[in-house]
Length: 163
Length: 415
Image (cartoon, rainbow over all chains, first blue to last red; front, side):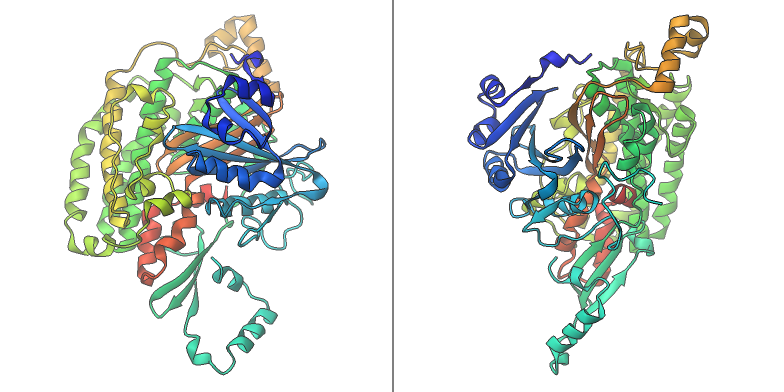
């Protein structure tokens, strides 16, 4: 069974324990938080440096953007957690990059300039969470109809929808 | 991507502005917008494409999706962990077992459960059968789209055998929901392995039969070769995975490179081609079916004895027999069914190689019995982004061949 004590959290502790991890080296200057849990590395960066962080990871050999998604942590602040899963084909390793956004300013830069595949994922988050992606080439709803009220995956949106 | 999406459902202002922009130079504006789908047989579901065409040539191609959006990710948040398993079948309905496996592995990773070897082998066996079944649907419909109508019937004949195996093992032909968090639903029926062995024995000849009909066929070659080229760089940049990526020359398969569920114990080759066209995707998938049969054979030969569940009474439902005779088992059963089981807080991302590419489940737990967030990274969703790159500059009829070759399932695109 999973032992919560096995998780390492905090930038310094993680960076000390995994000093030779390629993502740790790449994001050393940008990381604001880090966690190593269940064999998965999570590194948090400020939202302003998300493009720089993505580019640094790409430079470090993480060549494939697998997934971008979001988590709504209502009612806590920062409310939105934008999650990027990036894979390295060469190192056979995956890294989770996280940026946190406050409710009153839910916007972040698009990383489509680094990985064009982020296009659909970011549109999906824009549609279902209402997070704005600056610099996105075509930021429109993707799942829901254009005139749909609300963003269904937000926690304050009822599961049955509004009736 | 820049021009066509603006033309989806234009308002009258847009139309007027467009007319004004072209003014008296109407003759130069010789492209036309063609709407393909959502009700179109060769879009394999409810995909809508907005194609800008210049004569027969495709200038741009913008997919419009969401017609099948059912909010599965939202529904997951309202269910107990074990109640999510049947929802996962409905995402990629052509490979239900792969979805089950990926979700179960993700939750097992959150829980830190060890799965017994027998359960792992049966999972691998059924997953490879799922791959063959899914590839048979792809081959049948792809050939049907291109005009080889006979293939469809042959493929369905073999798929029927796999559907019967599904029915035998889980009671369902499509939405199997056979895997459980911590193992399998039931010990498989006694005749299952013989049934699978019969299938595995006769299938290589059947694949030869398909190849006899298609591989040397001049019409088939003419429609496939050189169509829908995708370079390795574009495949990676656009998030393409699975057979289309391997057909573009990227040698990557999660089963071999980041093994899960005991795949490291199996010996198989990963077919790769560096041609990158529709033909290469056909060749790669045909070889993949043969490799899957090899894995099935190894799983049958090496099938270990033992338990099919992890030892975790608070997570795995007890045997019927135990539940009726032992007080403690009955309490566990009652508690799992009525209030679920708490999963330690945390987040995991688990990816598996589905027939279409990398399927990943991102599960977040807040320490309660219901997932806080489940997100599915589905291969078709990302692969669809590469459609324009593959279709641009080609003939309109090639769009049908390209859609067939990327083997999309709209259920997992829209979720």
